[in-house]
Image (tube, rainbow, N blue to C red):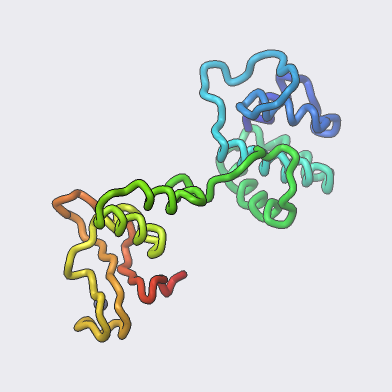
Amino acid sequence: MDHLRWLERECLAFDTVQLHDLERYMGIVGAEVHMPLREPWRVGKRPYGRSALSIAASCLKGFYLHQASSASMRTSVRSSTTRLPSRVDRRRSLLGHVKSVMPANPLAPKGPHRRHPKMLPDGAREKLLETVNSARDRMVVTWLADGGLRIGELCGLHLVDLHRRENADCNECGSPHLHVCHRPGNPSRAEAKTKHSWQVEHGRSPAG
Ligand SMILES: [Zn+2]
């Protein structure tokens, strides 16, 4: 929607928009581009972060692919300016599909992409293990990396959750494992977000 409004402000029509217009749009919402952006846009709002830029790039790409592929689409998109939320939601799911089919997108943010904001970047584990100075901290680093536990899940472990021997009493699993339980009210205030308990055996979780 922001892009449609911007097009209107720039007096650009769908069928005349060029790639450099789209790059300029990406720049004006927060991407690093080397070109004049002309008049300010979204005044007083924060520039998009990386993930918002990725989403915007996917949306633009899918939007213009469909523009190009269907003239009737043009009318429906134009009329969508008055019916914003449901259209946007539908378009987003549509574009998710387009994106997986065609990963290359000249508008997408460039540079290394961290796997997940809460996950360690590559090589961090080795550096952390060199730096930490207690067995507990070494265990924390190792278990987080090997077990795929979330921090809240690790901090919320109780001794009874650790079945680190063969044929534990729970009879749920023959090999050593641990249980991640949804257990509100921990003294540490740590809480596993998962609603379903899961377990790690032989260093990997059955769910993958
Ligand atoms: Zn068990």
